[in-house]
Image (cartoon, rainbow, N blue to C red):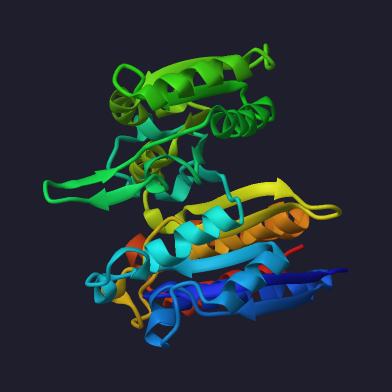
Length: 358
């Protein structure tokens, strides 16, 4: 028995809806396994702006820093597109959270569920057997470089240090040792100096992992190979912007963006797991907000990852993942996956399954 104390940031658009479904599942887990659930709920993004606050209010950040485990819904939307720079929900909340909490490693899985393969746009033979993880560097590169405008145009600086590349490469190789022992490093070293540093550093790190195969691919080629030979990949390692693009491309292999969780991780904590922020890869989808149409599965799986990685609760995490598989196989899903349940109904069904199954 333990206290599951985390920071809950519902955010904008469908964030509060998918978040409520995930919270229902977490309550079911806490009841079944005898834990105490303590969710510290705070505003972030556009919701904070609408309340007259900064996109990342101080109390929201302090809670995240204190708990070291953050469950995030979604941030942003067209409503706030007129704002500039760090006044915008995404730039003013997500990037500062990642940087200030040192969440340098973003992890996104790609393993199509059998029940969803027919919903993917690719042929079955392109998808069956696919099981890879993308490790994306999250606190460096062009998103965090110097930005500006002058009378002639605009610029965004892309910069990486050897230390930044080394630590994310170590994370990828460590993960590969627990899987199929292959790392595919993606860069643009034929053009970019940062990519040449990236490749050189990854090669150095690889020398410490003689049992792990290292493959290099240019990012433009990778966009093709990911769709034509997805089964060949195990751990894909790449920089911030390339990872942002490739992980969205990978989502089509899974049949729906609505079933893919993500974890943004820093280093571990004494007697606990890693510091991490957990969120679905989809956006705020304001066009379907407050209609009960949003698919909550990615958010629910993000909560499962939080239990495993930040609290060391593997059995609890597996209970959620088994319940999600049962929901998909039984068609207990929202309309985007061919079902008829509402967002909260899906969460309640998965919560009931967690309680009822051994």
